[in-house]
Image 1 (cartoon, rainbow, N blue to C red):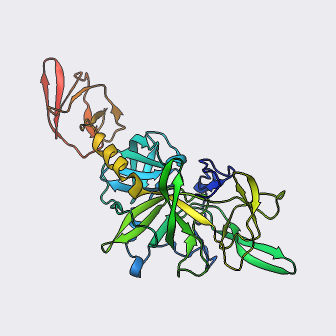
Image 2 (cartoon, rainbow, N blue to C red):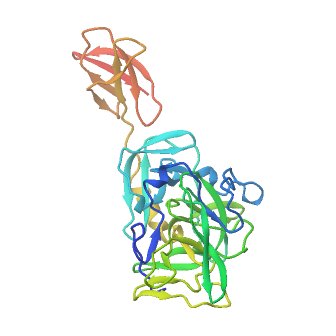
Image 3 (tube, rainbow, N blue to C red):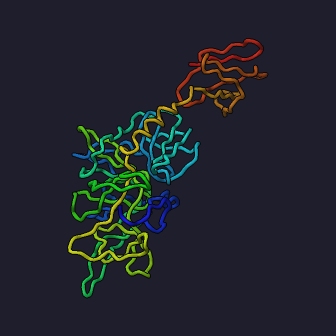
Amino acid sequence: MPSFRLRELLAVPGWVLGAALLLAALPGHAIIFYATDDPTHNTTPPTGVYTNSGWQWQGYWRGFTGTPIATNWFLTAKHVGGSVGEEFQFAGTNYRTTAVFNDSQSDLALWRVCGQFDSFAPLYSTANEAGRICVVLGRGYSRGSPVVVTNGESAVVQGWHWGGNAGLLRWGVNQISGYEDYGTNTAALLRGTFDASAQTEEATLASGDSGGGVFIQSGGKWELAGIAFAVDGPFRFSVAGADFSAALFDKGGLYEEMNTGWQLVPPSAQRQPAAFYASRVSARLAWIQATLAANPEPAFSPQILAAPVVGGPYGVVTAAVDPATRTIRLVIPTAPAFYQLSGCRAARITGIAVAGGELVVNYE
């Protein structure tokens, strides 16, 4: 385990997290590539060998990303935050959140929504991620100006500063190089390094990429193996210099903060790439499955809405809903009224009658 400290706030010494809440909502681009600074690169679904590698399961959550993993659940980064009642956007539809469960042993957060997803990602369950190619997705910063390290008379580009605003989904490729601990949890994080020319679409993550999915192929299909969490940094050109964040394919000659303070990464003939980290799904699979099983969607209980004319506007009516008998009892209106049902599932009114001094509505 490296000697730096794990932090869960943006730009706190030790690690930098992809949690730029304000900037992530602005128009821009995401994912930093080794081979290109083209802001339009990989802004459409991948094709060829990377077809259906996770893009189709990426939703929009608070300016960041979340991944549906069950009919009415999505997984994202805990440090992104959020409140029950906020909406998750997926496949052109908004889903109101009804519950959240934060993992005490990782940066994962499970959110339940009102409604049902048409599709969701399978989970990677085998603990053999190291060495495997992965597709990473996110909405973070793009590539900025070069990071130039001067050594004597030579000046060498060793990476790029984080660039423009975030917000637009992009995808890239990396390889899982190993694991890192999270607090007391051994190998709870996946690590991917930003290696020069390692993959055709070699990419790393930046601020704003939080919650993005990391997908690995298994048995011919792509499965969710991780959730974007953190990256190495910040860095300095000198021990007393200003902090900066960057995607580096070589940290040699720069200063990086460790538990003992800012330390020089000694220059070496062998490149020393910076890394990104993702919460490891296989390490927390038991928690995910137990949380879903223990917190099913509540029994369907629609609201009834009323309006004086068929075109509305409709408003919520105080009523007693009985999901067991699928009946709704309300006060008999004193004037003509039109009724609608509203709820997490499709429902229709099958009958209206007066009984016991009340208006009784049947639904299915």
